[in-house]
Image (cartoon, rainbow, N blue to C red; front, side):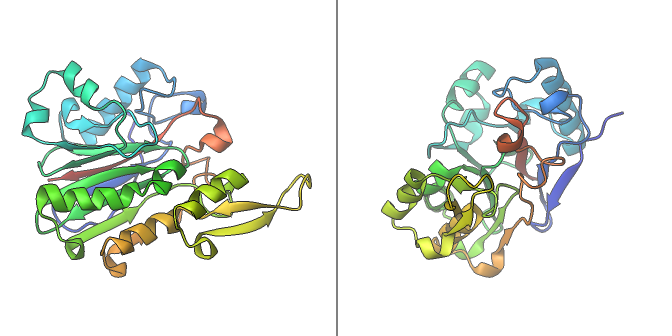
Length: 267
């Protein structure tokens, strides 16, 4: 029997939070072994089997495992009772072009897919609400994390000091080489470039140095700016690019490869 190998995070009692690894599923090749993302070219049968494995582990029904079709923007959808009452086709339509989900319903696992982008989980321990955010470099520039915290405040009455945050596995500074246009995108949006960027020598010697961006730090800064205490923000040490044997990395494997699923389930 296959068994998904997950990296779990500590959010306290009554919450299960995790990121999937590549291990313990039915997918093959660059999708091997565990992928549940429908939008990267994997076999639908392998995805179905992998979802079954994960739902069995989480002890939830398949329709309680919810993930959006992300497009590197900042749309956030609240998964509420009205959403859950919709037919499957309408739910799917509501999840198109969405990069973050939030819910206050127990027994529903919300999550996002990444393969070098940064996943961020939020949990409000007082209001009992959760959020899963996909923050690629574009979403990070558009401050999706700050927008997600603001929406939790608006929808659930959350207070930032009650939020716990986990930044999951993604590409780190040393591996995230970018062009000048990406560097300028961050600079133009007011990011403190001295704290999030650094020049590194280029391996092939074609140019002396190129900029690298620290995406985990960018998103941690947004969490702090939103009022979440530093002691309640955890950052994964895993660089997906450097650990592509265990975690999916689009820069290593190409875009036609699997995705890490980072989810949160209130029990």
